[in-house]
Each structure stands twice: as structure tokens, then as C-alpha cells.
Length: 220
Image (cartoon, rainbow, N blue to C red; front, side, top):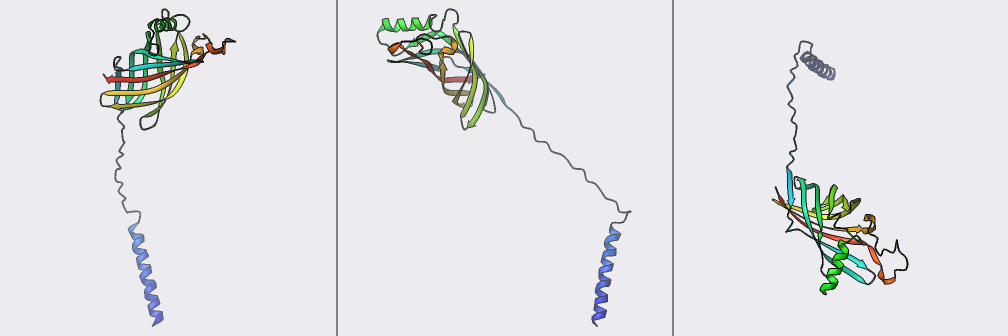
């Protein structure tokens, strides 16, 4: 009985293999179905913004051994570009003839300081009425935060500068804030610098000054 059962099992297995082989004989036609490739395209939205000279504000602060001075200077002729609300490039001019001082209440002292800042001792505004900043790269780090690298030109001299910035684009408006620290001696402004003059005592004016930028720009 066991022998007959075993033979029956083997017979069934052989028949199944034969049937499977027949299904894949050379006469079998294999149909290749066409495969459609779908390519995803990323659409970039280019945006252009013009700086609002009246809505923007640029303040400065310079320190000396006995204190500091601060004031304002006007921004002019600024332009920025973005793609999908991410900053890509930008530039703006600074009108140095508009420089003012905010801390000296005595008008004669205030006028004297402003006149000195415009003179050849500092910015030489008769020869170089404008400074310029141009973005070289803008790297978004998180949220509205960017690392900015650019070129700052003062008195016809251009140097690299880098700084963090906060920038947001909401609809048709761009807002940006940043603090730029500038070494004035790199622009041939060496008056009372302890790195170029000795025995200045409390007459020292520190090399670095700060530009606090608050930009507003509108979509074009």
C-alpha cells in the first residue's frame, strides 16, 4: 500500500513539472508592455525687488577711547532678486553725503563732526559720494536666517565682508536686517588708529565701526 502511494506522489510531481515546462516552450510569446517615464520638473519663480529708500534705514556706530558716536546715513538705488522666496542676489548704494550724527546735542560740535566725516580725513565724499555693497553669495541656514558674503566698496576700495542676516519675503515685500562690522583702515581711513599712530592716549578711535541695516524692498 505504501509503495503504491509513493509511486502516485512521484507521478503527480512529474506531471506538474511537465506542464510547467510546456508553458515556457520556445513557441510561447512574451508581451513587453511599454513603460512610461514620468519626469518631475521643478518650477522656479523669479522675483525682483527694488529698495524703498524712504522705508529703509541704515545707522552707524563708531567707538573711541572716551566714548562713541552714532548716527544715520541714507540708502539709495538698491535691488534684490529671489527664487521661490529665497534670496539669491542683491546690491545697494549708500549716499555718504547724507551722513548725520545723532548723539551730539551741541549744534556746533555736531556740525564739526559731520564735516570731519565727509572730509578727506574719513570718507572724502566730494570724490566718493557713494559706497556700495553687493552680495556674492546668500546661504539660507534656517528659517529666515542667512549667511551673507559680499563686497563692500568705500572710497573706491573694495573688500570682502561676511555677516549673518535675517530676511523675509511676504507677498510683494522684502524685509532684511543685518549688522555689518567694518574695519575702516582697509579703506584707507587711518585717522587716530593705534595700529598706525603711536602715543595717541585717549585720542584713539577704534578701527571697527558698525552698520546696522534695516532694508525694505518692494516687488517689481
